[in-house]
Image 1 (cartoon, rainbow, N blue to C red):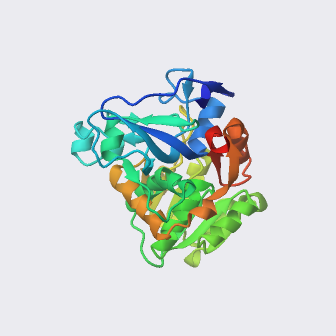
Image 2: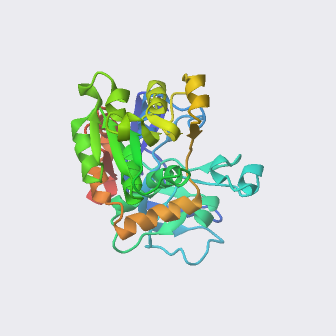
Image 3: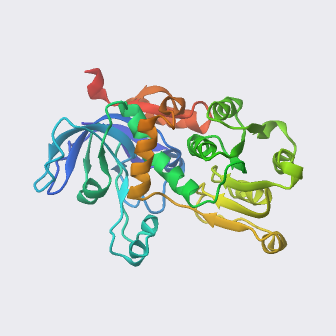
Length: 348
């Protein structure tokens, strides 16, 4: 089969590699569509300290397809030809964090990579916990959004957002746009900030109340606070960019007693500063949120199937597998939201 293989930052090659075969408890999926992702862009540009420990390796992790083969002992409900989508991880449910209900912090979280290819083997733990049949009304492209949406569902679920609250969302990439939509569904008034005018228009389509084009204002924090009641600040703010300087701005956007969700993963080894006076005397809640759990994955799939999150808004076009790095770079240039990667077999 053909696959995009990661060798080093900036070095991804389309190669012919052996088609994998499912072992006991595993399922082989024939990939119909995969989606580009901000995490994959980061991996392509700078590698990853934990995910890419062994190279060369296939990469990509948002995919949907059909069951091509099943290994011994797999639940008979998984049949060849069934349309399926899988998350890219599964918790062990045995470690201390899993037992305390924090599955996203699982010490033995099993990840799955290799979606930019024609086939992928889904390991036993994911088959048992995070493999789902695609509802009839969802396309493969739409189903691919399940995993990234699940991350945002997790992020929004741990925040107290009430009807009428003003929420600042920094970043109108895929995750920021998910947060915009989810906060709007909760009845909040979202202020979306981004550098790209096109992405801000998309934020409006998804329900954003106000937008701030960061490239056109001298002080982003002041511009956001000016839109809040009395200029006091947002009730909550979400960082969906992954830059320490934006983390700092996000903290400064909330009112006293507000909540800050620093969701965007920043480069390893970086740090940010926060005023002790602001944190203490304004009684701020500052939290980080990572990844998802099987519960949030199932919730995300249901949101897509119900149409509450309109999948078509997030997909900017299609690219063949051999152009996957070009598609990732388009995302990095803020040209489009996500791109569907089409494997070669579909064009045979």
